[in-house]
Image (cartoon, rainbow over all chains, first blue to last red; front, top):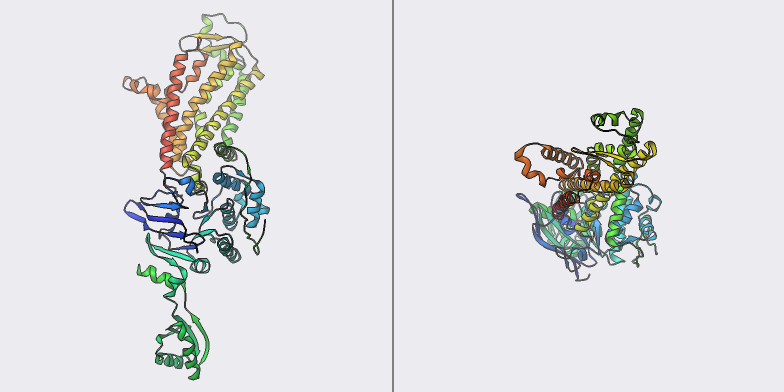
Length: 305
Length: 303
């Protein structure tokens, strides 16, 4: 991963009357990252994204995009940045093609060529609807159109605010695949805000969690999840006997019955020995699952906060 | 173009984008005009004048000049009038007099929607995240609003003069002023009407600028329309109030100069009054635009 910081927020904060919607948010997104931005509803994700795009003015702090200060060099800072903020809204009375023209011309300063627009639309499967008014589109189609207009100008950083909202499972899968490819094959940096934890876990390389307007944690997904990596779930029969055996094993730090098996804390390197002892004790081991879940990690850090 | 995705999505290859040419500001105005004229509400004004003006013409035709005779009944005691004074020009002037009451409402329908409409539909989140300054976006919208206003007044001009001359024919214009009667020869009427409509456009630009200003404060278009009409009515009352205490503020109200277009039918034309009126109206336009610019540049987009 490149060390070049493509997006940096410095003590970014927004205060509404007596309430801080976001406070001292310090984000660092490196070139090539797929950066997951997690937080419960009302945590300050959208406020932060709106400040990154200068839709709202920060009360404190600043934003640097591609090395330019947003406050003083807005046009340069946003020249290679695109995205969808909250939900993709378009001029419903205009066609998809015309909406693409408008979005493209605002970034490029000139109308993009029709072929380029059609290529972008075909990438999201909307080429046949290019000349239909957007008011006839489903929410999922608007999401796809939002992605198409974001990609139209070859951005270096793409900010996607809950991009799989309203998509069917196949559509969600395809968006995730697209995000992964944007990063891997094209070196595009993706800032992905989502409340779907498994989505971030699947595609993100680095992430941050925001709660009650404050950044709780930030780092690589692997590093952050390592702390919960020792949790395993063993399904073995007879369960009581297996639990007794496990409690006697020194390398098992804790073991307790769980509705679906036995939840235990065991370091990864000791798992084969634990399984061997269970087999020796004539227990049938059906499965060993590592409980490495972003959901558990997310809940633990947000509840602590 | 390489396609490399399974079902729906592919990856767009980084490529040299070829543009079709227009200068950036012209491009912004082009798309603002396109957006404005693609909306149904934009045509309400045009449809209204297209219905009202022929209707008035038809009524005048049926009346057969009795309205003019009624207007001139006191003059006929002192003057012997010959020739066709009931012609297209006088009908056009009468329509101008009556339409200026309704035109501000029609203009505020579109001007009040320019900023508030984008806030309502959420499309500011599409446009204001682009590398274009808010000032330029606002200016393109403002210019579009002014162009729309001019086009509406021009359509009134074309309809009332064109249809008037077609139905009632041409002739000299009997311009009735408060303190004098002027008969303007036919040969002078084209430039005088052009001047009148030009001045009319300027006074309507002030109304459009006011509606545009109100549009920057709110997130739905109804508020700016009501606020504009409320301010118009209130200021018109003050402008026409024969009370000494309000006399000092009258010169500063744009409504005092709303009928500046009538100066085009004075003989001789009082260019000094026109210049003063135009200056006040233009100052209001610039003032409203500057306030709008300040508000819009500092506005948080929360919709």
